[in-house]
Amino acid sequence: MYIFRAQYNWCQKAGTSLSQSMQPGLYCFFYFPTSVEIGVKGEKVQAKPHACMISAPKMPRWHYFAQETRMHWLHCHQEFGELLEKYHIPVGEIFYPEDHSFLAPLFREIRIELSGQAPGYEDMLDALLIQMLVKLSRNLEDDSAYHGVNPADRKKIREIHSEIISNPEKDWVVADMAKTVNLSVSRFHAAYRAIYDSSPMKDVITARVERAKELLVTQERATMPEIAEQLGYKNQYHFIVQFKSATGTTPGAYRKFNR
Image (cartoon, rainbow, N blue to C red; front, side):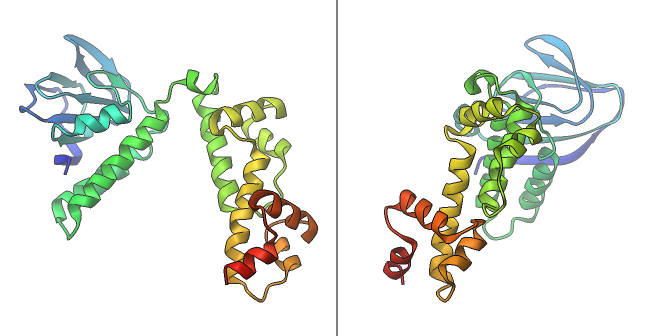
């Protein structure tokens, strides 16, 4: 288990400060929803709201709270460092997640699990911590890795991709997708490919074929036109052609083989 201690909504009074070194072998992860003065590499820095900072074992830490502050923090064992390296999370510096909305709820869940110690709580704590780090990693991605696709556009494109996977039967039109992100069609295509190494319509077809595999097996009495309609196709022939192109077999043969 990575987490040693955790606090959610910890109250620090106005005009107070914290100045101490970490206990040997422990990392400390702070999330400050409000502005706070933080010691970084020997200098005092005024951090903006929603700042995060992770201190390594034995690293001195100093925080000053000009106003009453509610913050969240974790103390983690030394193995936590391997996770930070894996997910490229900075240590010893202030960072600001583009989307911070997930942090407080996860700190709360972690605190509840640690306090309650219900059966399996250690596995749940590790899972919640990894979820937090994965979300942080996605929020801190280097723009250059996506050929200049900025974080706001990446977020919207990921939402579109998730919607495609969840609802492939919708009448998907690339021009409408591009409009959602406020990009031209050509720029949207380039941005989508930079993130997923695929095209939006290719992913629509893939999602429809995967859903078709499920329907062919679970809805044994459904006809091909009925299944095609459920998947958003205007006619069964278009469905059959795309299914065979993706799988190498027809929907009817797939159903027969998987009965």
